[in-house]
Image 1 (cartoon, rainbow, N blue to C red):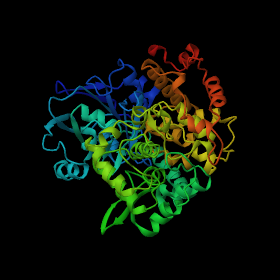
Image 2 (spheres, rainbow, N blue to C red):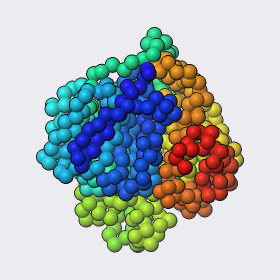
Image 3 (cartoon, rainbow, N blue to C red):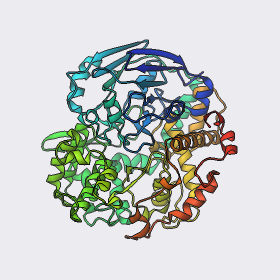
Image 4 (cartoon, rainbow, N blue to C red):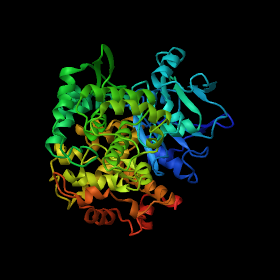
Length: 587
């Protein structure tokens, strides 16, 4: 079959065994790859303790990975989150997915716990298990400085920092030194397995069913990406930080732990300011024509610039208006392997607890020096950082004020105030991995007018649009392609790529069906893990305090959402729906 390599690799860290298995064609067609493969294999296992040896970690590519399709170098990791307890996936750019695919594998399935720290070197037909004792404790830049000469220039490296080793529940993993599997604590899962890094170095070709047709479709969609104002102008010029002023003007820019939705000093940390005062270059992932990554100059050094979410989480959400401080905080998170959104959300929670007099130590909004001092302590679980390392929900509950944690299902909310984006609020509440904008991002229709503008303050009618986007995003995460391509492309473009790559008769509606299958199987996993309708909720502040918009009308949207999905009052998909989606084996 074209597109897929047709093999997966099972790795048992406890026994040191590596076993190749064929990829069943039916699994490839029903779940595509990436996120879909991850939920398929995770749902076939008993629900395991997130930091226990039996928790499965899946790293998967997709049918387009490693080809010349725009943004086709990404990899998706899927596991059970130690921060939320839900199923969790995270996608990262770089070249790891492409190099994994060129090793001849569509996915790695990792279980067990090594007796001592290890890193793996995977090449076509071979797995090397190497001791990582000398790497244990090293920060992310040091790990890449050590491994890059050993791996070679054509290899790709995925590694964790001290935060993952120390079990920080929002630790991430880093791809090629600059892209991140951030949300949900995937780095902590690797740390619990004593897996410091994975190197993949392959050069096997990816077979395409119709290479000429595939090349033509790639040409067409590249032209569309180069003509779209978002993917050809806004993101290349300003990076994702272009959103700062847009969201602030829409009164949807959460400030000081979502106490307001407008930051008066937003221009000081916006993408325009970043470009004028700090940016000296940009970077792009494998096969990406967009190039949204920033290179900035700080104290005479060229370093990675912050994304929009990081600028918000470490800036406005903490009351910090100094962009140099935000850049330094972002670099510290990258150095230690911390998710910036959860780091900022947890620090903001601590700041509000301190303002209420509930925290036994002081942390004020706007105190950038304190933030810079605390980030390394979080990664090492030292001093006050030990209390912050379990996330905002645990911190707020510890001090008797759970309402102060701005989270959904335990995952700290990202940089969109749903009181000014009603559909985004429904997305946060229903996301299978917890508070997240990337499960079905309403930014396009509610703020950017892509593909069309809808009334962002209107709650009625949002469920159907959100469900469509949730399925679309699940399919993109399974192909695995960057969601930014969705600003210029439609499902028919992705279907044409799949037809040419695999030889199958793919249509746009088929991608929606794959996305719906993935979403419902994730829901079944979460139900088995103990979640239910009571967990589809938002912090009380967003439901009761209007800020600059109006409270989120969640109850009405949820009723519509459940009805459209054909889920019962218990939040469980109807048996007829599961039969339609060919998920009867997972009941």
